[in-house]
Structures are given as structure tokens and as C-alpha cells.
Length: 245
Image (cartoon, rainbow, N blue to C red; front, side, top):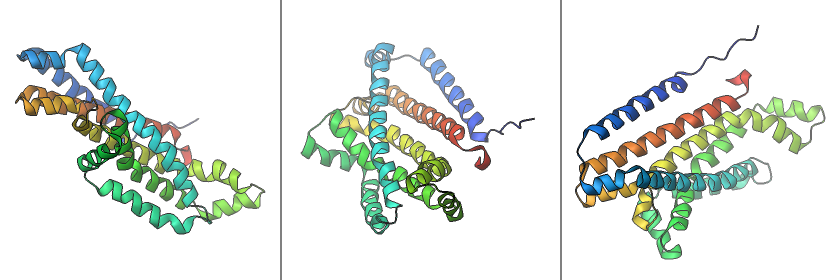
């Protein structure tokens, strides 16, 4: 009889928090009195577009980061390029250490304002978690397992794709999940350089002193980040080999 995998606490507890916060926000929204500006901004037609723009911005940046960081992390674990690892990590660390707002504003001098500039800034800001976790995940694969696969005739490429990467998947996906949450939160700042996001609600609330609009923007960003984190955790759990779950 096959034993079912026990679900970690965060897999079932996080959606409970999401539902509680979401229902609480809906009840508050339906019972509160809004100004015309708040009603216009939080009307479903406008809000749907704002949420979709925020998601598109975060997912576009995430896709680019994944395409860059995972292959780069794999390359840096190969013997021929291992000596460049510390240099690349330090460069990626500069992007992570720099203030997100300052980074986005700096890129406006080069690329102007708008969606493209926001994506470039977010890519630079979120590269480190995926790059570092890819390297860490591959480094922690038991060397004896790699040697055994080479001993039965696997090529270096086959060993990488059939042995090393499957064993490193949990750590790599953890980095992807971390980067996605960072991107969802940081994407709110793109409003300062002309890209539409949920940050527009927050900045409008601050500028016009509309606390309900500000609160709505903050709650919606938090909910979106928690949903992305939970979905990423499900993918991470599903992709983890049963023997190392």
C-alpha cells in the first residue's frame, strides 16, 4: 500500500490565512463608505486591470530571471567556470543590496520610464535568490551519486539532467519562489517610474490622503504575494522527488 506524502503545515495553513484576510477585506470594502476617487480606483473594472498589470510585470521579470539565473548557476558549478562563481555572486549581490527605488530610478536615465524599465530593474533586483539557490542545490548533490552515474556510463550532460538537477530541484524552486515574492512586493515601486501596478493605489492614497485606498493597495499586494508564495510551494512540493521530500 502506497503511503501518502504528509503535507507540510504551510501548504494547508497559508490558504486559510489568505481566505481569512480576503474575506475580511471584502466585508470591510462592502461596509465602508468610499470617496468618489476611492470608488473609481477600487471599482472592479479599474482594479482588475491594475492587478493584471501588476501580475504581468512580476511574471515577466520572473521569467527573464529564471532564463538567466538557472543556466548561469548551472554553468558556474561546472569545473571550467567554477573560478568565476564568487565574482558573479558579488555582482548579483550588488543588485540585491541596492535600494529598489534607487535602482529603478537609475535605470530611467538609461531606458526612460515605463514597463520595460521596471522589468529591467526588477530582473537585476531578483536575480540573486535563484542564482544562489541553483548553485547551492547543485553543490549539495552527493559527489558519490555523481560518480556512480558516471561509472555506469552516463555522460556529463546526462548526469546533469537526470541526476544532479532532479536532486537540486527543491532548492532551486525555493529560490524561484523567494524571487517571485520579492518581485510581487517590489513591483509596487514601479509606479514611481510610470509603470502601472498596485503601487498606484498606494501612492494615490498617500498623495491624496485617502487612507482606505492606501490600505486597500497594501492588503491586495500582501494577498497577491501570499497567493504566489502558496502556489510556488505547491509546485515545489510536487516537483520534489518523493525520497527527499
